[in-house]
Image (tube, rainbow over all chains, first blue to last red; front, side):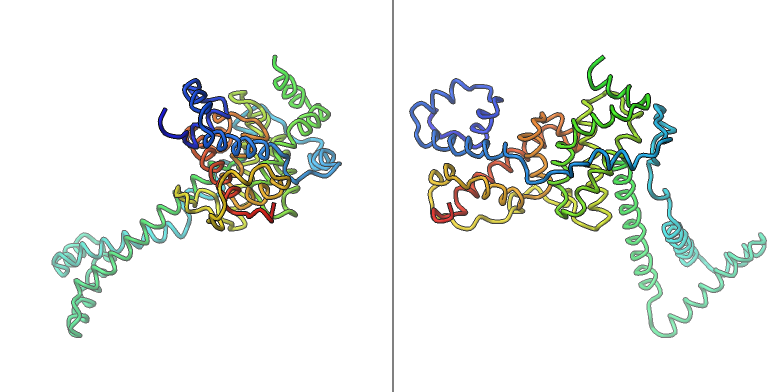
Length: 186
Length: 188
């Protein structure tokens, strides 16, 4: 072995998990630098065995037992005795609202790129008054923006992009929270 | 029937003194996990109590798929994570993998071989361990003080065995380098 031992090799040697310890031992026999490194790690390992500066109160067990009600349910049934897995509802109201808004915006975009008046007429025929009103309202907005020289397509693009970002962000954050709730459930 | 199995059966049958035995057998381990993960001294004992109350309430769910102590350590670990999350304190999984996340050592004026045989190594080492991120110091403590295997630490902290080993080796290397380079002879 021409090079010196690596930190990993020395740690494995001291842990007793080194596969080829003979090769390492023969290197150590004639290498004072590695011998010194092993000594350093040995001292560290001894130090790591020292107890932490923390102890529980003398009557710790009594305090815990006092906090357990006499009739506390100790069921072996994993379903009935388990604490709730999810600490928050799967879909929160705010998430639902954002989702609904996103869908509304998408519908609006779809309507915008089509002939709104025609759709309005058609939907009125189908009795879908609300959709027809929305289409008409969007047409008014489109006309209004055009009068002020604002490109309605650009406005729509910005609104849709921002909405998509918010929705994706909410979904990701929600998934993370759920994962944590499950992971730390007990 | 193993010793822990018998103990669990007694507790499930309502034997409170058996639960007292469980507490006394495992309070050191729980204390280690809580001490390493939570800095606030005033919260530590409360958290340890909370852990054992959870152990009692959920003992019926224990399926002997791991050692009882590993299961209890996992509850302690999860309770600490919940506590840190509730207090909006950073969790260790916000840390990256880069070694630069550790605080840098002070200087490199002294050669590696002069430091580690001094008398107050213990005090310096404790200080340096405290500076490590919670993830690393918990792994170091579970391995060296509680003599848990990589697999048991992995089960406790929900980490792959290889990751546990890698973090442990990295933490020890950092500690060794800090001890070698961070203090001059006068300090020791």
